[in-house]
Image (tube, rainbow, N blue to C red; front, side):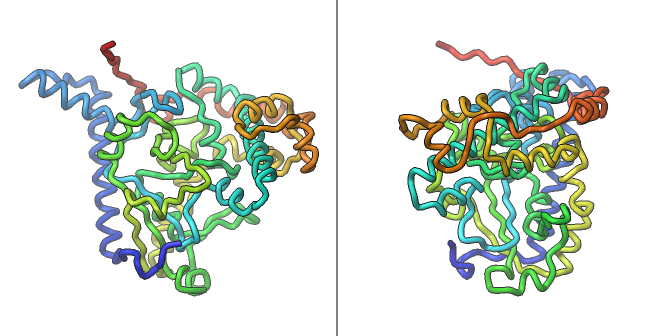
Length: 377
């Protein structure tokens, strides 16, 4: 864990300057989108080559631009100036949920089993997603359904760490807390941030997007790169302008020198302001289809029995060598049999009806666009 006294501090005026920059980024991208959707000819006047390069460069600032990445085909959200992550205190580490969980297990065999089980849960979550026509509609449009990254947004343990390019979103997570029992967010109060020195500050991670995206073009590996989630089935990931980093058990964002790390002093006034700006969390946690099947996601998370399909998915991913995986799972009271999903046809139909007239481009006010590329051999 970093020493809180070694972290550069943001003043309240610094925070409001970053909020202004964030709004400026939004307006810039919105103007590009409006011009493109209006059918305006980018080559009407002036130097053709210059206008061509300007248009190509603006692709990254366009909501709806489809692009192939190492993790799949993504409908991008507009680039902004920086990537961010917000945390409401200085934690011992900044690592994905699964990595934190596994690092607390000393026994190598048990760690391998729990990683295997986490992968089975992802497979079951994928099965749940594809019970709805809404998910299939995205696939039919040529968009990869990023089950693992989506699972992270709905509380399942993964090796992906959430990132955003929206400072307001990062600031919300740095100023608010989640009450699982009441399924609601609330702003931090003095009783939250006066517990010790590390809770007195919110933490913001920040990284330049242009340089990061440029380097991504030279490195097509999954691990360690910031990758977009973009527009996905249901609404949560895109409302948070979601990105994610795949990390291994030894990686910690606090040790990543490419990220600037800042602290800011908590105050009830600031926390309440950010909470209200984000409509009490509704701007990034909308009421959408998967909320109605939250109980099914909880069943997956708590289950000790999984389908054969989920087992095969995890088996094909593991690199831990063992003669009989089913026997090893049984040793730790995990079993292969039926899926934990218990969803009636009526509930499936209810979600399908809610999304029957859902048009991806109309609802999100985007137009799917892509650019053909020629790669010389």
